Length: 454
Ligand SMILES: [Zn+2]
Ligand SMILES: [Zn+2]
View 1: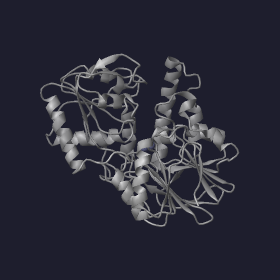
View 2: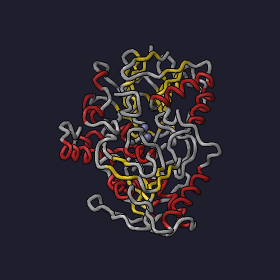
View 3: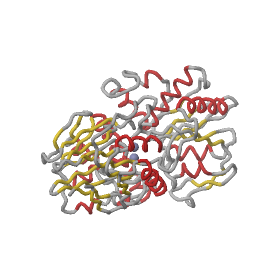
View 4: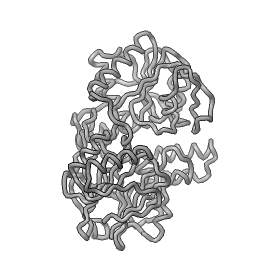
């Protein structure tokens, strides 16, 4: 029998980590760190692995909620083989080195004694063990028991879904984070269309149907229109973005809007980790799936760089494309938001998903004039009146609910396991899939739950 164990700490989008076991074979899918929790609470429940020593680990992409505790897992199981794409290895290294710096700062300023989980030196040693795998080239796992294949997931550069063909013939496909539609730089997913028995699927947008008539082009035109409305009379625009993925997609589009004269030719402030990741996007522009092969963002789009030590000051007419996307405390977008919120002529424009408990979600839902706090909790930190304009756009790197359901229907697996979604998303997806794929068993495993897959 093959089983699936949910090693995440809570039933929400957090520290993604799952165990597939079959006899003496144990495989771990992702090793993420919770984006909001602090200290040991941010880790998955790795203690549940106990005597089930994994032979192989698969990392689907370099977002920290999928790769953040990989060096911790490698330290616990030094013999485990670690598989990922070449781009994930390149970007994952940069993300994790940055995470060491963030954790060290949290130890110093917030007294989190267990941080950092690993040092730069330990990370460098862990990186040397990573096996770089190409898309759609099958390989046997370390114990020779399972045939594995990585498929392009279209979510960010290097992202993959993982197909596992077990010795008993069971074929399991884990989507990781997926986007089926083309984005601006990254083409949509190229996933298997048949021959899967168990589909382990993300459902980030399970509770959010798309607005009728949505197209990415229309949304881009609206973004350009809103930016122009704010910049022309002398306002400034803050766009909080994830350093990896959304930063590069939006930077490309801002460059195009500026080039076509759709927005005024004003400076775009862009720096920090987002700029470091952009260099990697540029370096890999010919060797990875791209909509514009060879395009180098830093040649195409003129930016105003800045170092993390000197905050860019907010000046009229400027655009600030700044991480983090969730406006987490101690990040630059959080600090800048405090300057933007009270100013009626400025705007904050959101371009992606925010966790319901994040400061970004609080700003999104605040009414005009309402007091907003930007701390870890809604009642922590100084309150600012929301006087600025707030706009939300849908440029998600995650598949829409309809696209997920349509994929599941085409694939027609025997069993669908829903992961990577908050409670409402998993519940709604579960009932929609019961109708759309009537022959499939639908599971929404809770943390620590061990679920038979056969
Ligand atoms: Zn992701
Ligand atoms: Zn994720």
